[in-house]
Length: 147
Image (tube, rainbow, N blue to C red):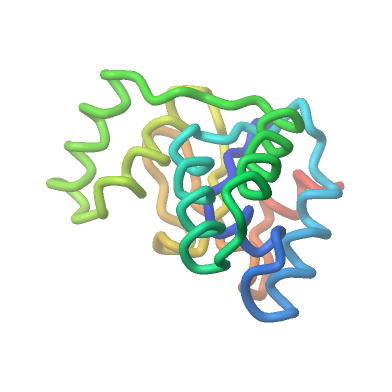
């Protein structure tokens, strides 16, 4: 089962946020099989903005972090088709454009899960289920993925 990671998962794994979310994100990423993880390129762009803006990390350190994520997992580019789908999601489901693009790229890359806390937990679109890994009880799909 392929899984996409949203920016907030990466940001927590980088140590931005409360201790519980940061440790949960790190444990989760460590347990995921790297060949099943997809990072929409949009998430890396957002992570770069967060690391330089919110975290005030130097540009070189931010670049190193983003490239390290890209070296660890498959990066999926945004296509015109995904962008069009994201436009539909903004209209049909009132999702913010950049979140919608992440979901559309996850679907385009045959992901079954999108791990994020930015969507409605359990939202399903084109076969992708959005799972918030920080809520209990944990989604059976996520539990199955981690076994």
